[in-house]
Image (cartoon, rainbow, N blue to C red; front, top):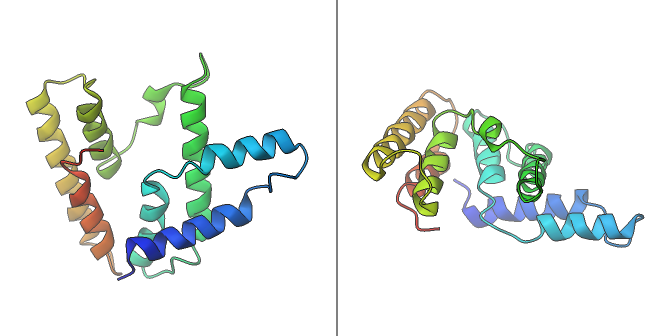
Amino acid sequence: MKTKEEYLAIVERTLDETLPKETERPAVLSEAMRYAVGTGGKRIRPLICLAAAEAVGGSAVDAAYPAAAIEMLHNYTLVHDDLPAMDNDALRRFALNLGLAFQYEDDLLDGDSPYPKEETERLVAETTAAAVAALAELPGDTAFLSALARKLVGRTV
């Protein structure tokens, strides 16, 4: 099983390779793109992509570009969330299981869940359990994904 640090190294290396260098024209756009993506963060989405590739018998290295693309798209949505009338977050949240569990947990942390706290906690537990159960059907190593799914429940950040 690869560690989080090994997966992160793949993601960071691929992001650095694929993003335009700050000096590339138009430099102001290249610099802004690197700034938006380079703020770090949890990088949960690309980690899931890499681990999922291995879970179905593939290679994390072979999934590096899709993982980087997912991270760049995620950062794009974060930037556009801050711009008026540019994003519809309700449309971005038609996800299943782990994605939903992650969103429910974010709603708990942000204090803006549309459901009572107990109901939101129940939804987090149910969707996380469904995500972990779905992993059991995959032929590859799903240990990292299962551990990640369980770790997302009850997180504080």
